[in-house]
Amino acid sequence: MKEFKVTDGNEKERLNKYLAHILPNASMGFIYKMLRKKNIILNRKKASGNELLKAGDEVRIFFSDETFEKFSAKDDLPEISSNLLKILYEDTDIIAVHKPAGLLSQSDKKGGDCVNARILSYLSANGKMPSDFTPSIVNRLDRNTSGIVLAGKTYKGSRFLSDAIQSRDVVKTYYCIADGHLEKTGLYRAWHHQNADNTVTVSDTKREGDKEAVTEFFPEKYSGKHTLVRVILHTGRKHQIRAALKHLGHPVTGDPKYGKGHEKHMYLHAFSVEIPGIGKIEDPVPEYFGRFLDADI
Image (cartoon, rainbow, N blue to C red; front, side, top):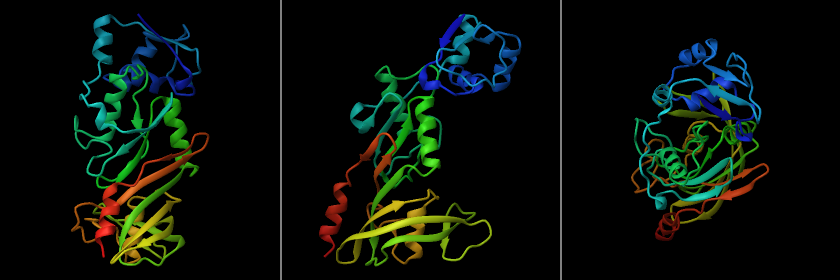
């Protein structure tokens, strides 16, 4: 028999989700079967799986050691050197890290290197991996975008970040270099259309199915043929900054999908996030931004 005591980090998580973290190799059907047969109980009583947990609840799993190991064993995590993960902020429930350009936020194939895998490896190597939750990132950056990625270390942290982002309480600021001299300043409202080829189109007029995209642009420096722009996102649409700047005639420099794509880098960086109750977390703009602008004479 295995016994687990629910912590504050799993407060308000449903029992079935909690069990799925403990038994990652078990199907939800199997978990419900074990609940019905009372091989899994909550606070020494039969449970349905839909209960919302609270701190101090006891979950008991009556499996043999071999069966528990079979359903609880997690895939081996890749060993990631600590110098590959730059931590910008960490507390009991959340972590913010730097994503370099060229690295995926989440793997597109099992076992591939990505920010999420590096976070899991870091937590595992430092004894911070919870047994009852699988930490995961809550925001994604495109492969060629650098900057801040947030992850929940616990269910509580993941829910807090997801809710704050969904309610637009998290203020996200980016820096980019745009082609040409961008004159647009301040709030820009446009309509965001998802295309079948995994691109988006931005328009000043609404079409059926379009969603509003709200962005603020603040040009801060002009060089020979480019503009350094501070950008604040008020919505989180796919490729929002990239597609909006293309529509305005000033695509992100080096953008292979919406721009010319002939530079070594795509010059887009998630610079800061302001999170209620935590404050501002910053990730300095990469040095190659400055080198590019200095050379653009």
